[in-house]
Image (cartoon, rainbow, N blue to C red; front, side, top):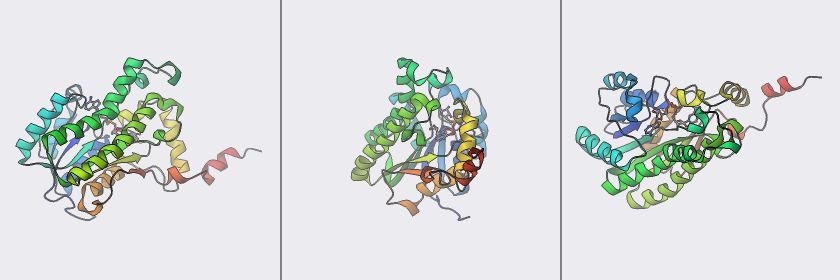
Length: 271
Ligand SMILES: NC(=O)c1ccc[n+]([C@@H]2O[C@H](COP(=O)([O-])OP(=O)(O)OC[C@H]3O[C@@H](n4cnc5c(N)ncnc54)[C@H](O)[C@@H]3O)[C@@H](O)[C@H]2O)c1
């Protein structure tokens, strides 16, 4: 393993809910690689308490913020800057939630108020994070901003309902803001499209176990774990990827470019 890839780098990590979270693994690796950062999550997630243990392990603090609130984001950046002693080199958006999925509504029967909530929490908050960052000018040049996506942005996964649309929007925002922030400040913006992963957000989706197993059999390398995703995020925060921007980067063991796998064919030839 390379060492100190993030030495001297400072940032913010959203979305660590419990030890399965992609953001949780990322925080541990960022610490291991020499970064200084603060953790943040929605006030409601804070009540579950686990994030405080992570903060202790990472020798940092937790600043509650609802990522859909511009005021909360301003407060987050102000307090984080004060604690960390300067502007930021990286921001991780690791946030997703759909009330329609939680309540089992099908794609043809969406509650539109909830759909707006899904888009706001899972996608527009990414725009808001960058909008407030730009307004407060809190990113350092050559900084890196990452969001997490899923291949349902490109292909139909019936049970992913309004989250598919949210992910398509998230990826579009990465392109739109990536251009803008690149021009303004040489800041890069990308999303990682991750394999199905056994986290709270992941397993909340109907049929998760089936498409987890399907993806695993379809991918020549098998599903990428949350830990491997964290490794990828660390490289994207490092100086080794300074000219990668406006991309949706598949981190899925080869799933996205496999038409069919021998493993899956074996299960289908029944005569
Ligand atoms: N798990 C998967 O299968 C999978 C696959 C591809 C992409 N992703 C994406 O990875 C990201 C992280 O999810 P995860 O799988 O680690 O699950 P997770 O449930 O551990 O993390 C989701 C986080 O979003 C936070 N959140 C929800 N509403 C918020 C708000 N208003 N403000 C701030 N934070 C809020 C939650 O508190 C939680 O910490 C999400 O964008 C998710 O869609 C997950």
